[in-house]
Length: 113
Length: 119
View 1: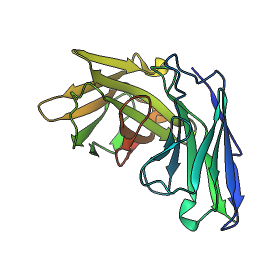
View 2 (view 1 turned 30 degrees about the horizontal axis):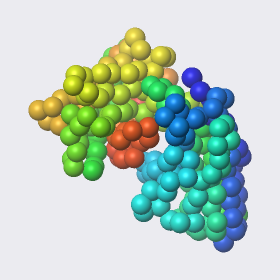
View 3 (view 1 turned 180 degrees about the vertical axis):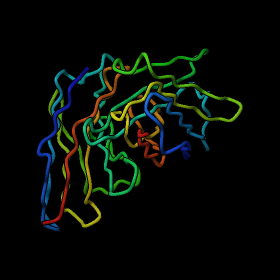
View 4 (view 1 turned 60 degrees about the horizontal axis):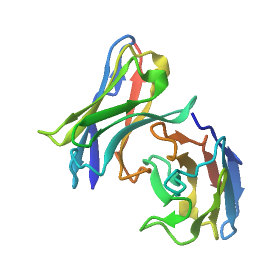
């Protein structure tokens, strides 16, 4: 299976400041159809995961535009332009290029300083 | 689209864990969708478990580590799908989620079910 490695695992951030989470895969995530299937999920305390980004940089409707995704090949990044209190929680990357076994990163815990 | 999970929160060791995910706003037979089970535990993080999908016939995929113990089954009469995990141990204690896959991602998730394996 493809191993997904996130960093940092803990991310203390001041309100209004930017934040960045890295996700690296053990294999290229470029699919034979030319797309790269890397998603980002947010899990707030007590809630289910919610998809924010898919196909590296496509933002879900309802996801705030302060969230953006970038990267290619094996290196990917989720950026939050200005952290708000409601952004506290866990963030996961997931690869879905290598069917049928989807794999997730370990999760990054974002907290307010 | 909404997914509503149901099933017991406590299962005894060596018994079978059974959960159901009821679908509203979509069809379990939709040929463009796959229906998945995922779990979250402190020791393993998020772990994809298996899926079922219809492409002129029914297919399943399972995590290699669970292949001998897991079954994911569609129920077209009730528009839902189910997870069965046999011979559970305390290591199967986790929060279990169902989720929809419209093609290489998971866009809608159920509310989650906390399952504890304990005598």
